[in-house]
Image 1 (cartoon, rainbow, N blue to C red):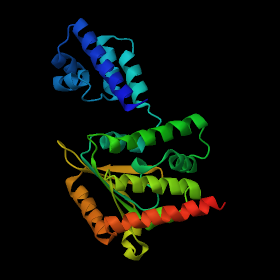
Image 2 (image 1 turned 90 degrees about the vertical axis):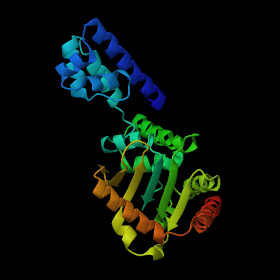
Image 3 (image 1 turned 90 degrees about the horizontal axis):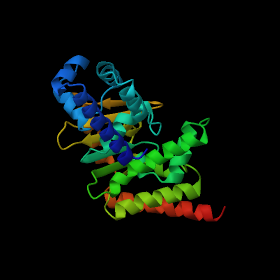
Image 4 (image 1 turned 30 degrees about the horizontal axis):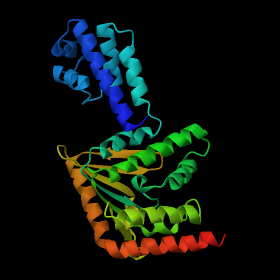
Length: 277
């Protein structure tokens, strides 16, 4: 389900909640008291600003005697198979961020991936997944990347370890296309990309993947990811340490223009390799 469609569905949830609440004669405050949230929260549900938890939706059904409609709507909307459970919240925050900084030690970040590259990575991580599931995950990843082409796109800064350029994910042709897309986005100044060379030393190897996000009206967050797990961090002290780690990586990375030259050179080498096979 596209982001626009999901938002429209949450708006329907809110409109229906307001209608059923008013029909039952409850104010927002009164309904909130019955389901253990504030009246302000009910108002945010109705305006589709805040998405209710499943247990709240169940209590709303019980209070308004709505035969499970809000539970069913909530289950439908939160059952988004495009993203792993541990990443879903981070994906939602990407759409709200004013600035995103990423460090990628092994793979092209999801926001920069081409469909072919995303498919290879998805299959590698889910070798027994049915075709429909693979298609959903690839579609979700490509959809995420569209925020970098919006008029209101966030500032996006990526640091790629040289590993990312040298590991031919999907073969030479797929990798050449992928690096070409990264270089194209950098050339049109939609993103800023730096490469951390092998000569930078061991610090990068110990760091792991890292995503930093800043927002207009909320504190910054950090997201780290390992095999089939992820951590969304919002403790100010921890986020500050993550930002310091990113600054150290940025200090060791090649300048943007030198990085772009290296990316384009790697892409050209892969094109030549693809043409001879």
